[in-house]
Image: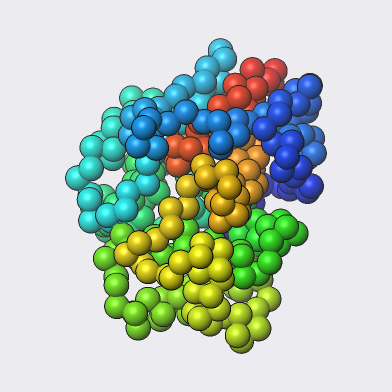
Length: 298
């Protein structure tokens, strides 16, 4: 199971996630909504990219410090020589953090044969673990439990809509990055993903029909009004205001943003220097919340 902090977000008011709370509130207040920037308002370049990759911001208040490396996730998993990795590594060793926050699940017990092995298997997530091990510091998952996230999404969206987005974002784009195009191989990976991630880790109850690859494709095509083709996947960016597909993504990211800021907030109670490696969009939208928590008296 993923690392879960004792505090749990209960009712996240999605429409309110983009409005600063009038008071800072206590960092033990489970109903506190941290201020964020709407995904429809964050500033990217003309190609929809970050100002740099990684885009690094520091938040400082006395001895308390957050370094956040926001990344553009690579679509080619073999690109282990990408300059992004060297920049993250250089910043990590210059900063010498007390603890690291990673995206994508609990990696605290993962081991890798080498840095190249870590990059091939898990990209910047694997790199964060290798670097943290070198300083003998812990890694903490900055994402909420999958079951919590999915249960929140299913309050608003159908199972078919959830699968259309989540499978595309968390499986299909990865398969494309691994250059897997064979339909039988894709379907086999899909079946495993449904069993272990969606129903297993995520706790979503699905009928036999709802578990099929055909069910996913039907709902993908219904949302996007075009055939499923792994070579031409719908981008899972949250910036299209009229598309329900991207709206699902925004809702998911709002849930994750609130949990990420809360995680960092709690870690600052125990540690002075927190190092975060996460998707860069999260940095842009979470910036007001991070500015709030770094200023909190502890």
